[in-house]
Image (cartoon, rainbow, N blue to C red):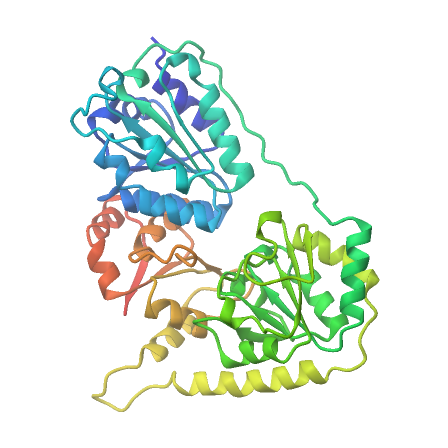
Length: 458
């Protein structure tokens, strides 16, 4: 008999899923048993929170769908912190949330929760499978939505329904699209006029600038604009960038703040930078974002454009009149060089017998790490040192709980990053509290073949 669970596993495998993170439990038996007959690896963790973070880490480094699973009640309840992180980081994760026996739903049964309500705020799609006839359609919708909306999709399924005979054994395959999204010509001309009529322009680039490095650099060159990056834009814009003036925000540098404060116009590219107090009050603001709902969310705008950063920057460049004066860029760069020197002066060895400064440790990690290493800092001081002393080069990755701000993300996310590629160097910069919180995941690293994550504890 082909069960619903077996069809789920067959569908996941057909769509390129190679592993599922989780902890087995009675209500998941149908699903985990079906995995035995597949090529999908079950990555057993010590806490479901780690499973969700691991899936988020894998999805963050690949851009592909990653999967985690939790048993009914408290089991899938533990997923929620990692799923919040995945949702706010906009990475595609599918969560299989097992449910209590379907006949007991609504009776205050042992371990009963209401997963559909629980996960609604941290997902782009959540649905309960009450009957085998809903599958595999619900699973396909969940996967497609997670990929296209770049977020978390949750499939809630009672253990007895998973063990029922499948009504359909169709293997649903999802589509991963790559649309070009640019503003219309009139909007581009409005943006160009604002930029051309403004003397001092500063660019603020965020995670949405991924894949747009060269186009943003070309735009900055024409505008003679310094480039400030948000933390999630660091790995995409910091390297090979003669216009770089560092970060702004709570973890940033004075040079990044000053480059924005001294500008007449801030051009926001693919950033949802949340700190209102770091936006200049007097400067005009033009924002480009693929998600229209983000426009003007953080600061009042003079113009908002919906578009992909790379394509929009490419379309905007021919309309820009190259600026002759580079005084704003020069003063911003000079300030950055002074700020950078002060930071580097703190990252030096101490005298024999004296405690080592964490800045120096971060500097050594940067110098010793591989050219394509992935760094995963815990929230707290490790993020500060990562932001200030890890150098990006276009090959390295930087993943963390930068939007959700959870403790204990580093080692858990590293599980997923390393499981996806056992030959790539993965470095977790863990806080002592974060490591202690999820200490059991050291066993997960060891038991899974093992996973050779490097852990530096601050």
